[in-house]
Amino acid sequence: TPAAGRIEFDNVTFGFPGAETPVINSASFVAEPGKTTAIIGSTGAGKTVLLNLMLRLYDPQQGSVTIDGAPVDKLTRAQLAESISLVPQRPYLFGGTIATNLRFGRTDASDDELWEALRVAQGEDFVREKELGLDEPVSQGGTNVSGGQRQRLSIARALVAKPLVYLFDDSFSALDVATDARLRAALPDATEGATTIIVAQRVSTITEADQILVMEGGEIVGRGTHDELLTDNEVYQEIVRS
Ligand code: DGT
Ligand code: MG
Image (tube, rainbow, N blue to C red):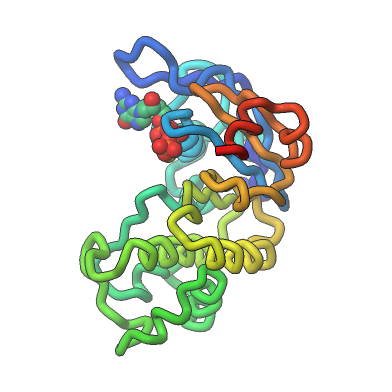
């Protein structure tokens, strides 16, 4: 079982069956524990597919994905689920209550832990406003909570699980800028020591990331800090301008 959560992609190429061109082309990078790796790039660039390769939703045709040196295809789904929490681009809620949804990754979490995760995810206020609080019923698919609330509950669910690796797929772009800022201010303490990977649309979400990967057409076409990329990466400069 992984102990640190260091993710390494080594020359990974992946294409969907029957497609002519790969959607991930020779991708290599390392995401370190205790650090934030951000991924930015236009729609269709391959950001979600890159995250899905870590969870083995599909396996690469070439290259390897490892966590703490162990190829992810040697780990069981249960080991992967214990190590990595994904907040998907379109979060999903299960029929049950807010509490059962938050405890999805770790059934023994206390109510205090759920409230703490909600505080960080900027979901505390709206749950407190519910008549039944944590026991408020949620319909399957979460149709009785708004999209923004669904997003925050999904973020809180990942925090409750306390994984080694957090994957946030575009989890902050639906939030208004102020909420996004508050959430990101609270996140480092809550995820301390973990490997954090954030797919983002807004540059302001990722300016403080330790490392930013710029993706275009399935390739990593730039990497560095915000300041470094501003100086020397045209694709990043274009994203900043847009
Ligand atoms: P986004 O979320 O709109 O910002 O875009 P990305 O960067 O997350 O793009 P991604 O990774 O969803 O898709 C990369 C490419 O792969 C894009 O050309 C669409 C294609 N693709 C994604 N999912 C599937 C799939 O399930 N089947 C097939 N055949 N192609 C897919
Ligand atoms: Mg995506």
